[in-house]
Image (cartoon, rainbow, N blue to C red; front, top):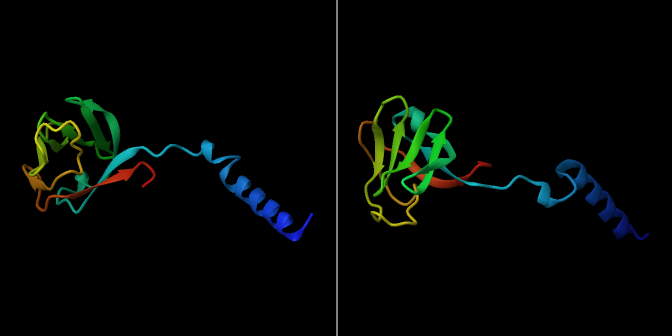
Length: 124
């Protein structure tokens, strides 16, 4: 065995030990939402898919704050009757491909400032 083949075998073995036998065993990355900078602190952070609302994906974070499609736009609201905290101000109303990161949020009942929202994955 030449030196290259021997070195490759060592690297492959180390990779397999660290990450498993193949890339296919890695967890799938799922679209998620990441909000930051919201004055209502519970609205910040990673929100993962949590069912649907109005035919669109609903996303909920660890603080039970959800991104919910109301048929025209995404709204950010907290469970427990806190109402709408923020909503998108410039999305394409009713567009079937509208996503929670498609627009700029403005404050409804939340605390200023409204969050910046971006697409993320559940690995973030």
